[in-house]
Image 1: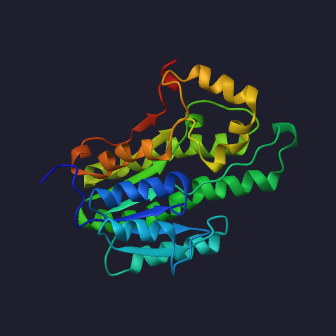
Image 2 (image 1 turned 90 degrees about the horizontal axis):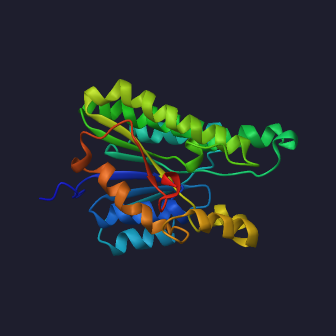
Length: 253
């Protein structure tokens, strides 16, 4: 059996209905994992990601959760804590971004981004992590960002949240690694999704971005799948507290 084989494991992926979350759920299912997909727009009765996971021969369960609403996050955390089959893998990917100059950035925007991008991930990690600790094994992944390392412009809430994600990865890893639960992050570069559509549509900004990426192209959501499978698998059992960039070389420039 390959060290990358996830057969028999159950992965929870938030933000799974589109973009990066869709690609991560698809990659984990392709490696053998059953999937619980979660997002604010996912229809539990039928979804594209559910169809894709089942087409790969894996089980899929969908949940609609708005992670900007604390009560909904807490309720879903309770589902994770109480369900008969516990999660072996948790991918905290749900996220949002709000763009405005820092001097004019609305406080409610800042709060909403931190709630979705940081606080919800901690609450789910708590719920799933307790069961992983009891079992003596588990994998928790966070979607970090280039702004876990850099400050960005016009996105103070997002930069704060993703810097917080990097700190949370290290903090949880410090406490849990010795008990068989690894905690890591994936930092996507400039990936062509709806979250970056405004940048793609700005000719000057898009050109400046491409000129800095050694790989010479925007990333695709599926470029992140290999890192997720690796970090979720036994091949990464001694990798924890790490943030792995998947950025076409951006940070090395």
